[in-house]
Image (tube, rainbow, N blue to C red):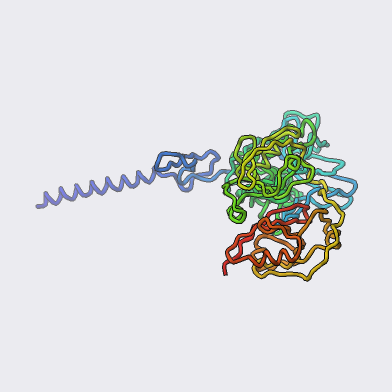
Length: 506
């Protein structure tokens, strides 16, 4: 009996020892949770059930990037910029004209006389070419660049583009300067780690780290803006400095901050800068194609209210008098669905395609008008600069008899007839017809659609409004659940726009 007991005991001990050994060995095969950070952590591709890749993911437990290595690569190429002017400088950017909730501001925007501003930049060529923001050096009569080795050198402006807030500087007589490698901003994703290097509040070569919060943010110009939003801490003096990815590549140029929060910053994508560098070097300025239309996306509300059958495209809101689009016969409510044989998905896509082409070239557009598709050819002119004054006629319209203000409960608008005083005060184009919105109920559907006091309402669902009586008749037919398209003229930006209003079910 004791011999059998001894055999069983030995067998059980061997089995337990084997299992314990397997568990311990398996533990050593796992990546160490406390491993030191490296910049080249192993990556593996995640695979769907059908075998297709869904993107490269970090190996489970792999550590984060070491930004000390990233900064070591790029920091020497970052420069401090001191720009001085003897007198006041006009602010070329129409800030917050779109009623943005966060009121984003450019960094160095003081225009008191004399003006001395500081910013940042980074070297892109070993011979001393430097990228920064246009607003850092705008109107400056003397520009000093301080290199990472402590030298201060005079710089000259090679070229500038106010529309994208990019400027190219040059310090002459240099060679073998450290260069910041440029990345590809088109591959960015929200949530990626980034770091900023610059000269905030005079603290040279300060480094902050955060993530990409949003891509494609519109701030100042809804047609060209494509800002990267980040929560990496940036302040006055960071303007023009690089936003850098985990591979040590510049993917943005820091340009603006929110006036209401300290952790919301914006950068110009580096691809926008590299695209215009040849023009800045050769001509000192940038020329872009232009056809003279104001566009908006074709969304579900617009499709429903205007009974449109096409699923995608860019809807024409306004056509500038005398523009290429006007000469080609393009009209408001037209839907542009193709450009040079390629389908147009949205207004952003179309604007960038047009802007990327040289003035003087021709382009074919595919247009849907009243359920009929046709082609037309336009000859592109040069896009007006952002600083240009709106083309508005200041003559008054024929005298109209003002009626009592009218108000509609479902739309939430108070309106009145246009009179000569309103035409003169708002500088309305002579052909403008409609009613003036004098109040927007803050609890109404119109308020949710961003309709504002001082806007001229011209049409509801393509039905013209010439007087208060027209508005009263059309608004009386509105029912809960309706989706309306309102055609309005906004005097502040001298532009016509389409606004969709969804009437709440009650």
